[in-house]
Length: 162
Image (cartoon, rainbow, N blue to C red; front, side, top):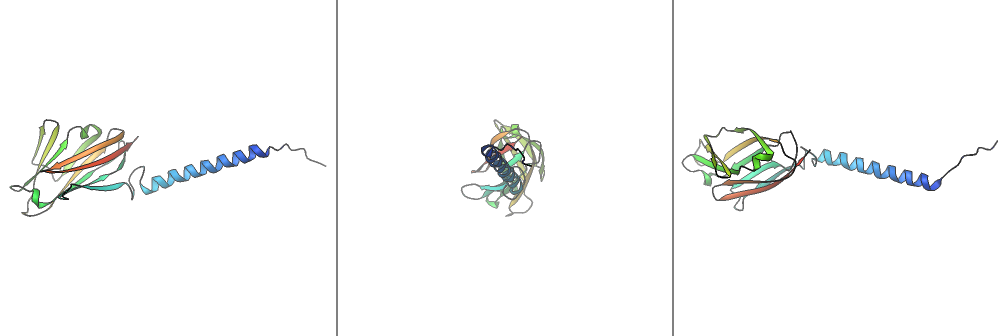
């Protein structure tokens, strides 16, 4: 008895090739998620510093909309004046990042033109200040951030995934 089976070798080869491409793309997507390209992970956190390195910002390079995306700002003692340090952040940054809290609590928050000025007390003379901004990503797409401490400016870039 002879079976009559129609075979299309070209179609079969194209189907296998499409499967391999699909598996490769899915593997790359999983790998990107694991290393932090699509949210928190080992490659998602970054650090930016001012030119004189007296101010640094740790930030989430790739954030997800509706998720935590905090900033940690470290300021050298050279920026402390009369027991206080002043941090300026452009107000437009908070259009795409919702501010949920700041640690330690600022003594003052002032709107100064297109800037928000945060004034913090530094309890120890000569101490380096560590300021944590608890943020939630609210926008989508590329976002440019900037933090000014005295004459030092730290610029950084983020991307907010949907």
